[in-house]
Length: 314
Picture (tube, rainbow, N blue to C red):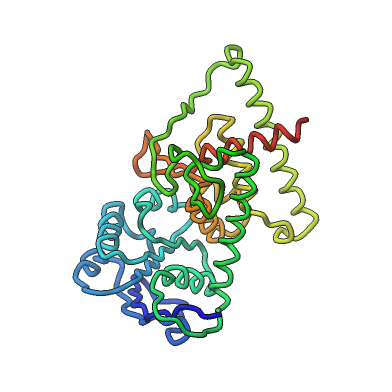
């Protein structure tokens, strides 16, 4: 097969140096590093680059990080952002959905190379024969797995498909569903009223949420007897966690969902991004804190999960 030839990309590194990509192998030209202090001004002063690699995002204040994001978005380049899990919620809220971003938490060299490969993907041009590298193969497998999950959920949801899901990932909707990747205002009330006044359907939701949480605990118990990566299934774990949270009327932060995925945070963040792009997850604004976003199931995905558990109960 013939793959597209990729032009060399300019990668601006911000922060302390560490594991660096092989520029000859990955087709990047390294610029920097530039210090974190004053990074937004340095980015605005530079004329041309394709990827910004922010090594120490935690060190930036909210204002400095927002300024940096605006400078990156204005130039239409990608962002490779390394941060701690504790800072992910604060940082993710400042990044618009339209910006190409790869998140890294406690990342290894391979994780960084995979992220760089993902950010370079749009720069393909003339066709030539090349051997596909391991990083691109991992990205393809991830996308294929999410597409498979989206198709299965679309089948469960019936002919309505998954609102907001790209046509390649599920059944065709009526065009009135959710818009994948965008931040929307939450439409659910997370307040929990007195149990004695709960309607019948609320009691059913509580029972099903309890069953889903029990299923998640059973999945975690396996790790006491077998290697954790033997049964790693972050997509399903996140679907279960978001479904239970929806039934419980509870919001789910990005960092909380990473923990629920039971895989390294970098892997979980990549799954969240891909599932959001596929229309399965939604970004919702926190009505009480503009510096945080929540992740929720798209309506079509929630409907598919409900049908799945209804089938289990028959």
